[in-house]
Amino acid sequence: MSKKFHTITLGCKVNQFESAAFVSELEELGHQQVSASTDADIIIINTCAVTAKGGSQSRNAVRKCARENSDASIVITGCYSQLDSELLNDIDELQGRKVLFVGNDEKEFLVSRALSDSYQNKLPQLEDMRKIRTFGNLQVNAFANRTRAYLKVQDGCNSFCSYCIVPYTRGRSRSLPMEEVISQAERFIKNGHKEIVLTGIHVGNYGTDLQESETIVSLIEKLCSLFPDTRIRLSSIEPMEIDNKLLSLFSRHDNFQSHLHIPLQGGDDDILDRMGRKYTTAEFRSIINACHEIKPDMCIGIDVLAGFPGEDEASFERTRNFLQELDYTYLHVFPYSIRPGTPAARFKNQVPKHIKDERVEVLREISEAKKKDFCLKHIDEIRPVLIEGSRDKKGRLKGFTDNYIPVLIAGENQLIHTVQQVRLVKWESNSIVGEICRYDR
Image (tube, rainbow, N blue to C red; front, top):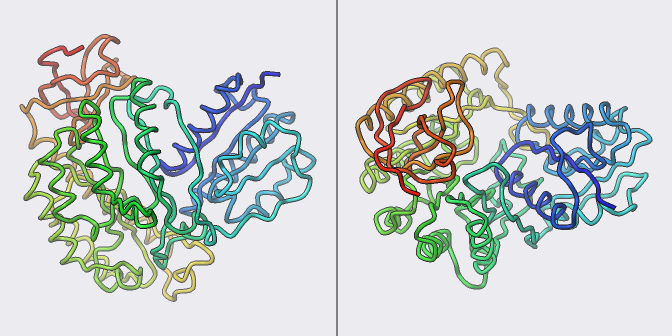
């Protein structure tokens, strides 16, 4: 019998890929996705634990769905479920319900279990993810309403930074074999995706566990060569994994998009050391400079934490000055979040919340100014823009250039999911307004 299902996904691009795989498998089996949890027979919640906020949002999503739909079976998976399934299981609204917990190592079996009647009355014992060495076989047909597709090529992390819970919830680094990456890319392209974003938990570690001696560089090289008409983008990569081999790909392959997202996390050397990061601010600066030497128009995004334990006014000022002077495009700023079970949770000199919030605001203001400056440098240029399916309040289509500038364009629906040559005209509403120079079908 056909069932109606609803998915809720919190957190990272890896979770988004996995949820898309659940949708693909369920639809292939004849089941129908619905937009509201109140209409569903099965509700799948893919949780996040990377921050305390992600954990809170995960709990609230479970509670809300259980309260609004008393008849649906509820399937809970993801990092917060892996970290604290007992706390989720004790939520009042779940008592007496059909609830299934699926570990991060068993997501490939989630759909078959969700459709069976094997819901357990007691909480299962989830596997210690640090023992897992396999890469789940999840396949996605397409991302609904997305022009770009996320392709999970790697999972897990071996770094164990002092603040991070992810190695405990995702396990050690594992890679998807090259032939399976290519097969998934072909599936995306067949179903109309114009851009593929390679993603993972520590994507630069791709291939270190494979006998074929592949690397993230050889993977990108292969995909760019096999699919020259498809835009290939890298989601995030650690600074010390950016070398001449990786940077040379930008000059050798036009379809490797001019954009890198690089986690910094701290702009003070003492803080970086306490975080367990394996570089200094001087080394990070030299890496950013090397990126611009190879590709002057490159968009560079940076992750940074504010309020790490022991971050006093002097160390924050060093971070602020470093980020003010550095040549990059935008920041993703997060307040440090205590994650029980990590070394940093036991560190002394925890920073009060109101100070963390103030520092986050300071860094976000720097980010906004950097982004505007970067975009304005490209005014009057003609760049390829991949046009997506949504419009702004004025009815203009949205898209991104190869170097990740957000662009607003007036045009008909036939432009959606196409790449057009666009002149960048002016700055407006935190984006660039563009004009199509030539219509390419």
